[in-house]
Length: 457
Image 1 (cartoon, helix red, strand yellow):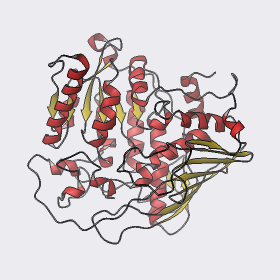
Image 2: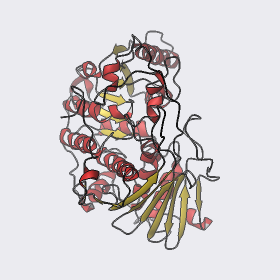
Image 3: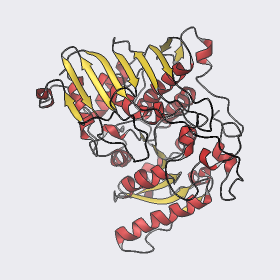
């Protein structure tokens, strides 16, 4: 059985673009913040995903202690402090167990030498830059997917993570055994040839519905709107462009192309990553992509609706992505097929295609699912739960199950697909140089103009 370090290293060497496993040990490994002691964590962004997922999954591990929170919305920062302190008070029976520090600017948090690591649960356009800043500050990083807003900034982020040697995990939790062990099982069966050579992969992803025009509203005094917009263009404030002020329901920015790409990255970052894991293409990407999509002609929300993507890989496999297929990933090989899905949306507010899978794990022949993986076959990295794996790796300094380059490559395939939705022709992608071949227009979409002073140099 290969160790996870040997497996990651051999995978990287075998890919078109090689990356060495980092050997730099950050200074936080030594002294009072040694891995044998508690890991002090700062939370960047304290909205829906932080409160419902990232914080609870992290704080249930005794090795972790969240001691700070940052948000450009001071009301959310205060509620985050209250949320964290109550959690620990209920858990320990001690009312004053922790006194959480709040920040309006995460960069001030990164200056605190007592903080060992950060969780970044911000909108998509605020993913890569905080991760880069945290890496430069020597903080280990858990980053919500997708890895970046653009392919260019994703490459910069991955390079900085590798250069600094911080421990990085992206929230691609379909790789971990808790709560969805079926993805690991499906990918391991596929990697070991139980359905023969992979011919096609079908990924079911819904689109987002459009919305109405929304009027300009006064900027809440509690919100640093300029910083919230970050590197993206200045546009007028309206609540449905940002996040709800009175609850933590699904925020409107998810449906605005200024801040993300829609469901192709929202859920695509999960399912495409699963497809890459099963195909063994984690460190590369497609070589040909063509797509079509419906985009709203009016309204504030302008991310793609119904769509279809076809992507060809160098190994000959064809990936199809559309809401026409059941939400999940279907691997089709020369000798059968395996389908895997979560079985239900992450939250009740996530869009659905109305074409949901009846089984979370299925195969052309049920006997395939009972197959035993032998000791000399491929055994994929086993992670108990995504946040716990990150914490374990902070202590061991091992590579996580979803490190920076894996995160970047999954996100890149999502973004290449999104670019293809915008252009009426087949695109030829070079996954080594991360450029489109002979297509200046497509290459101009690898990055976006950045508004001073929030961009990435």
